[in-house]
Length: 87
Picture (tube, rainbow, N blue to C red):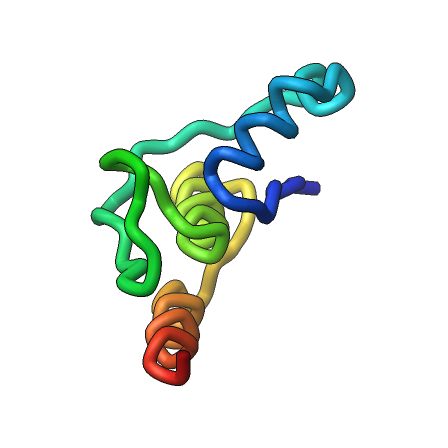
């Protein structure tokens, strides 16, 4: 089970900081394979990703480690691009 905080970068950071329950959970860390593709909103610093991009990177990391399968890694990114075009 993977828990992903879906919030603005500042709000997600605050939720983690203020929640002892969240702080007690193990964390998955990764280095993004590409800069954010989020064109609608500016990232506060390099390495910041949208929730969808972070989920994609997590699934890639799990697949690389053999813990899960990620059969169509481009699917989420295609949907992300379409969502931004629609907006």
